Image (cartoon, rainbow, N blue to C red; front, side, top):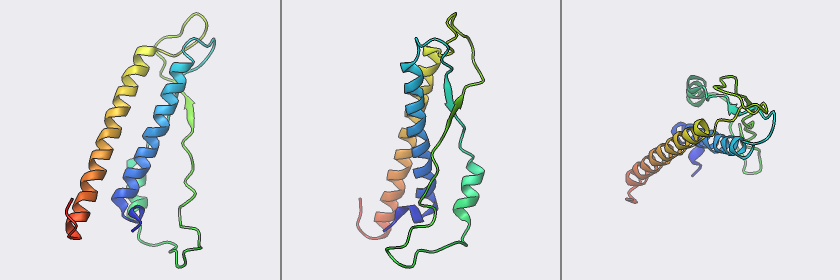
Length: 134
């Protein structure tokens, strides 16, 4: 059973992919905290309304043979862009604020935990509906 065929799981998977990439960007920012002229980066926020409309669209290509490429399989990556909302810049031109990055990492971790909790609960409901229990 392909869980990505279910819109809820597809959206949660995309959100978790974004959160994973966001964690990488935050880690890169912290790693470059002492690099002169380094500009802190951020990811563009996910557009929930666009994700919802894409997930609820029922028309589109269908995979009719296992050797065919699945529709939407080539998901584009998330690009990091320079952070324009910089609170302070060091004399060396570095815009990484370690306190802000630590708070962002904590929020990112909590959001990821929330997504995995929802994913697990939804999977449990499917298993219960199929008579497999948890």
